[in-house]
Amino acid sequence: MDILSAWIALIPVTLAQSLILSFVVLAVMLPFRILSFPDLTSEGSYPLGGCVCAVALVAGVPPLPALLLAAAAGFLAGCATAFIHLRFRIHTLLAGILITTMLYSINLRIMGKANQPVFQEAKVYDWLSGLSLNGSWTKIVLVGALALITYLALNLWFATERGTAMRAVGANSDMAEAQGINVWRATIGGIGLAGAFSAFGGGLMVQSQGFADVNMGLGVLINALAALMIGEAITGRRTVRHQLAAPFVGAVVYYQLISVCLAAGLPPGDLKIATGVFVLVMLAAPTLGFGRKGGGAPAKESFKE
Amino acid sequence: MLQIKDARRVFFRGLPDEKVALDGLSLTLDRGDFAVVIGSNGAGKSTMMNAVSGALMLDKGSVHINGEDVTAMPVHARARHVARVFQDPMKGTAASMTIAENMLLAEMRQNPARLRRGLTHARREAYREHLSYLGLGLENRLDTPVSLLSGGQRQSLSLVMAVSGEPDILLLDEHTAALDPRTADLVLNATLRAVTALKLTTMMVTHNMAHALEYGNRIIMLDAGRVLLELTGEEKARATVPDLIGHFSVKSDRMLLGA
Image 1 (cartoon, rainbow over the protein chains, first blue to last red):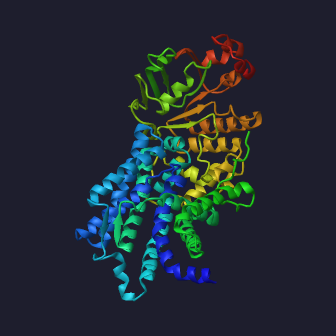
Image 2 (cartoon, rainbow over the protein chains, first blue to last red):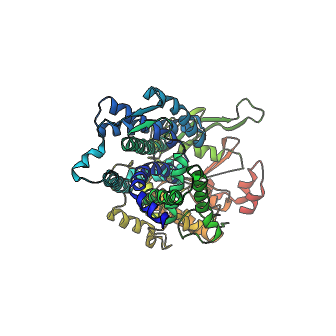
């Protein structure tokens, strides 16, 4: 019972965190699933967004423009990854690692130090102070609304001609090009968008925790990936709507699982192995024959002559 | 109208296995021409098709479509003029997307994607109608992912997508070679109906000599990156399969079997 009550006590905090991090999960999903561009840039664009947001806040920029600045910086980081992949034919994963590595130095330069507190500055969460909610619930309401808006906006986007074209680039880029779609523009735009979401998440996190740290991105990618796998196992990937819901559902469920582990007394140091096991189980489940229909990838493509 | 002038393309330049794929190839197709392209493996057929579609840039020479110089135009820009069906049914469609979405993508060749709703009701009705001509029942499966279709169905869909919007040039790159004989006939017949009805300027590569004689109004035989032989009208009507095969410098089994 101790575990249960400990877990329930943690729910507001973990829920707020998971909603913020769902933007990073989205930033992992878009390149990976929609553009077939496995990308690691989020590991760098997340702290980039955090650093940019913190510096902007300290410089007196209001909280929302600070978030948008963060997103713009993330957009550029994503564009850079996509560009070096397209132009120099560097593998997408390597391109992302290169940009992430370089971003570490850039993030340090942006802040001028490894850590920047922003406790005193105004935050987006202050907007809801009139609702007199408990701190975490303010964040849950605000970020939840942002996540919902993002989900709906992306659904609309992928129903447009341009959104369909972007999906086609991921589905079959040669075919997309032969249908008059500018593959470069769609790829750079799509990866840039993912970078923007990741950095936006970083900005939200900085405003939530009250400081930015150059190391805040450490391991965020594997957490996001774990969340995505769990989300896809729940929502499936049958339609764009299902695929787009996976990051949000996955983030919430994953961080609750982590929270349960912590409530059960798992030392924080062991969380990484727990995360690894989650990802492994999610990836392995379909091959063991009890995977949900449409969830995850089949172990083997159905045999075709 | 398609005009290829003195096209030259060398692969592996300066290396021991340097290969001259196009060696000063010149070719003119008039509007409405249906040219069947034959030639041994390595004669330059695919390279020529790629040069027309823009998938491959020429070292020298030029490509004009309807008088417009498209030599330096990238694939996606040239898509406004050129549609193509590949040999591999997987290449011409986006497998993870639905039939309707694929049809929508084909529309983007003529009208570049804009920020407006994609699959409108009117469009779905139009796709239903276009697909019904195939007689495969695809019109009732608009929301089925293309990955669930058979090779023949996918190739038929590729064909409908290619002829939609009436491209200036239609390239058919051995587009029935990967299909079983019955399906191949079905797709070929659909091709002929569409090409005739829409009077499309078409280039079809085939290794089947009987098809070369039976279809189209011109036979173009390539060899070593040039046009070796061109038959039109009377000459084409009089030609026989052994005549054609006689011109092949390398006789591969496939051509003989195809005949």
